[in-house]
Image (cartoon, rainbow, N blue to C red; front, side, top):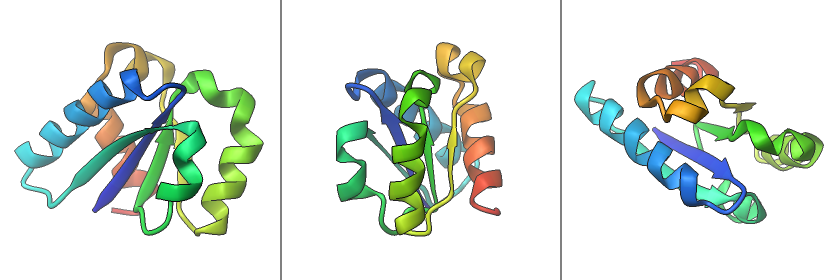
Length: 101
């Protein structure tokens, strides 16, 4: 399963991706979690099981949904509390649910 975390500059999303990756490995999942900035989404969305974006990117929602729907990839925003605390467990649960797992 490949999950993509999208952020403005990519810095905070890297920490979140690491936490989600660790949680997935701890659960025995075959998982890859990558972090990118929103400007790279077009290049990385294809083939992902789920794309989650930081809540601060809601102003780009129409554009982000357009890109992910083009590749038929489920998309949502990370809950503000989970994003702020970089809660890998909850964010992984959200990605799994989004991906239908």
